[in-house]
Image 1 (tube, one colour):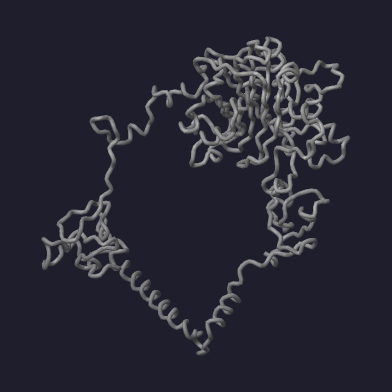
Image 2 (cartoon, one colour):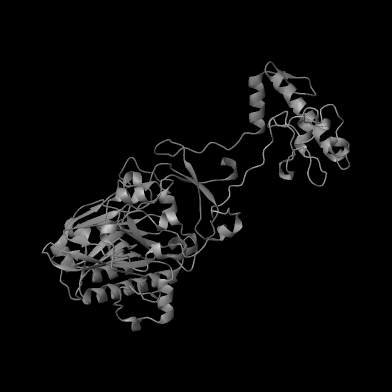
Length: 526
């Protein structure tokens, strides 16, 4: 059984024009947990919700649009027997829920609603057959933990409370029997080996998120005074592997030099890791996000349920065929029930009589105001041919040799004098530019003084008048052009621009990495 987790940083962008199925097939897992889908309930479309060969389970943010969100995609052979949204059970109003909610009295109802309102968890329960031929359950918790924003101290406390709710639910599920796996973006690097720049080790270890992980995860040879029940599957099999990261900064290009952090995990209960864990890998070769997928392979075999639980997106009204879409009421429908294809009015071939619809008229609008393009046609006063090669409404075979009606007489009709004067000015400018372009092939006359310039001198003159942006400075270490950045952090320098080395961020000892050049951008060097 293959399990995979990936923070996709936007599911619609990650799917691309080819759709989601090729992406899921390429990942090659039985259960695929995606985080940061950035899809709310109103934005979910059928190509993302219903994928051939998979059944999907979404959790949406109820506070902000295009924010957070997780989704679990299961192959038909790994269909879960139960599924629910959230960790608290507050959003579970259907049969087929997973259950086992732990000790909810440790949280207020308002707190549970806030923790589960951002679409950060989906839980699925699967039947599996272990390597010892024992049938049991495996509960998969797909989770996207909050980020602690330094500018918003309350988010740090929110993150810790989310950790505690996750731990309470996971331990309750494990206590009820079967196995439990937590997969997703935990948003904390556990050890210094999991961070490209841990800095001061004492300060690093004092991080509240790392303290929680210390008390939640078990490691071989570690005393377990608190009864740690879960294992970091990657470090369990690769305890000393360095530079094993899952997240990089796109702005600084740090992925090119593998200067990142490991914040994406597959955490399995200790009994499952000791008896069934076969492989645990990172997949940095997979692009498309600022994170890379992480996967684990179990010796167990998944036993697909005969029917998807009610949370499956296939049962949503708009995808199950039980709810009509608003667009059905806004289009003309033929007798057979299929939408009628609206024909765009086109002009007929020259020589045939026609009456052009009001929307397609080139020469005149309903109110008698002449369209600007009418004056650029040959013989605009008496009809003629428009820019598309079609004849106007009057000049047809039937009306050949006749005078046009008064209402189609072009600039002579009321209200067209202003337009005619505008056209004359435009034609004068066009003629002047045309003559200047012809003269530029040989010489350019500057006007008053009668000075004649060669084309190269003319180009230099224009460059002196319109110099364009100044060339960026060169960084001191590499002598390469710098890039211009803008301060976005709130503070006295917010909005100011500055120059830095254009190379990707990396270790200071890496000669390929960015140097420490910095220069505030002034009006003189912009």
